[in-house]
Length: 256
Image (cartoon, rainbow, N blue to C red; front, side):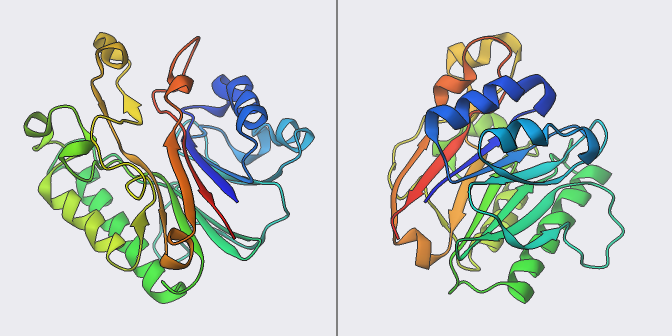
């Protein structure tokens, strides 16, 4: 099973790229983030014509997540459904071929100490509670998406310069670590221990061409899948060309 995850930063702008990506990589599952469309105008028919089932959770202008699957999904959960009044579309879970696939778009946080920062911390706590109460580290599960955190110094070009920001602050790194300690492994690090491999580059100041990036997009897996992960990669080429997303897709392949 090949699973991919990609923050497309507007599915309407990136539709042709997304369809070409599917044709090129042929993933069994593609998790998308930052759709920026409501469900009624999500281009589901285009993806269905390409051979994919579409499950989406969108909202106007901001956020939004979708999971495209070759096989029909089951056990769909849209939103965290944890009793918190939260209109932001950031969580989607489906079961496909015996694997629980969770797609998330974690809040950015804007500025350390701000209300949006507190929302980010609280959202991570809600995600952790979801895993603890509704999932098991013994089940085949992947947690994919844009996590808006770089894990360690290998994941960003200037660790000292980013340490006081919402993407690398010690508190948010420990918060993400608290989630992964539940029983998740970073599939990319299973195959690549070196630094300098990024999934996001700012549009400004030629950051991509200068190599000024961060790795903030992940495919985490529980042990039943991590032990069968045969490959993991970042499609850096997708960040090139006309009207790219500021994120590159990440991929992981599992043999089972």
